Amino acid sequence: MSFSAASSVPAATLRIKVCGMRQPENIAAVGALEPDFLGFIFYLKSARCVPATLTAAQLPQLPAGCRKVGVFVNESTAVIREKVAQLGLDLVQLHGDETPAQCAELQAAGIPVIKAFAVDAVFDFDQLRPYVSSCTYFLFDTKGEQPGGNGTAFDWRILQGYDLSVPYFLAGGLELEHAAALQQLQLPGLYAVDLNSRFEIQPGIKDAARLAPMFRQLRS
Ligand SMILES: O=C(O)c1ccccc1NCC(=O)[C@H](O)[C@H](O)COP(=O)(O)O
Image (cartoon, rainbow, N blue to C red; front, top):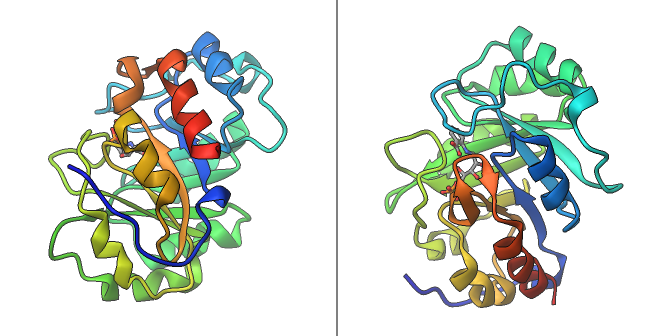
């Protein structure tokens, strides 16, 4: 699929998140590229799920400014808070049917929330309105069989009509061949891009050599 650019936020400000990290040496290799966010998945059905034994002490030193995001699917606030404390997570990303009330509860506890939404051709942005006051960011991912990590892109043109105040991450099957289009992309509210399965050696292990040219191009 190819995409063309539209209007507004300068692409040079695009932040980069790499999601689905689970192994300390690999985290260090990707960290060396200075991502803005690294994602850690706490969803048992994902092949990228963080091992239960991983502790904060095992995590390598990350560059200043790189924030750790915990990814959850329909998890209780208590469990999310426990994982945030255990691994020193900076934000959480919610990929299930979490309510605005749960997002507000987490934000009130000092945990910034990225609420993810699965987008298809008939996605209705009005459903986001109740979340506006309780989320720091939104994340738009491709609707698929899994709650995330489906590896397919959606038609970004649907975002041209986005008119809410919450900045968002663009996700879903992003890969090196999208770099030029992403770098030019100007969409209202676009804050960051999210890279995952298209940059993997195996689920949960990223290919830093393939991520490097993506970072270079996005930041050029
Ligand atoms: O990646 C997963 O396995 C996953 C499973 C369940 C919930 C969320 C998950 N990933 C969250 C992400 O932020 C991914 O980067 C996003 O879904 C895009 O993934 P991909 O389509 O593979 O680029």
